[in-house]
Amino acid sequence: MHTDIDRILITAEEIQAKVCELAEQISRDYAGHDNLLLLGVLKGCIVFIVDLMQAMQRPLAVDFIAISSYGQSTVSSGVVRLLKDLESDIAGRHVLIIEDIIDSGLTLAYLRSQLLRRNPASLRICALLNKPERRSADVEVDYLGFDIPNEFVVGYGLDFDERYRNLPYIGILKPEVYVSNHE
Ligand code: IMP
Ligand code: MG
Image 1 (cartoon, rainbow, N blue to C red):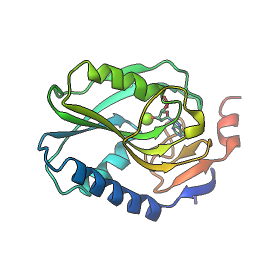
Image 2 (image 1 turned 30 degrees about the vertical axis):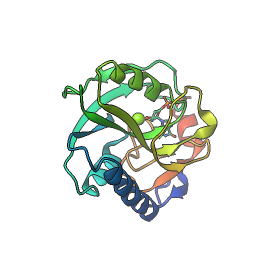
Image 3 (image 1 turned 90 degrees about the vertical axis):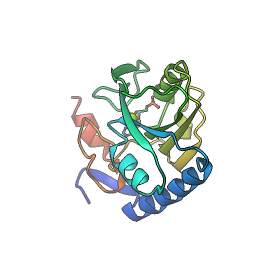
């Protein structure tokens, strides 16, 4: 285990099992539709979307959007910035947003409202992690991996200050790591 990690919350094996479950569920639900677009929210989605799409035995397309609500902090600022727009036209398509984690829900609430204006055939949300205690915006998750407690986690794509994305598990970061970073 990495020395900055306090404890492992979800092991690599548990994540893989859940990703397969989600892939099966999504494949079943979209069985009749051949124009499914997985829309990954960069950068936290990177590991999740790669594993998820490989577990899905069906036609699909992938695109990415980058938004930021954090900067170098562990608390959401509430201000969402669009850093990179997607390249596809989503009008008439079945769009499934792929997110690493929903915390306050502000990022997804903003993204959802922006995307709905472009007239997709449907718009759903798939998130690996959810912190229900912290929700302030009203967003519904259609496909969810795990509910987790209100702790700052890293790994499997999730970062603190761009680090730890490559850890294969979800771990709780030692508080002294982010406290010392801001002194
Ligand atoms: P929200 O707008 O508060 O829901 O924030 C969502 C975004 O904040 C996620 O997509 C993550 O990028 C980031 N985030 C929230 N909680 C964590 C965490 O525990 N670890 C790492 N990133 C997080
Ligand atoms: Mg994110």
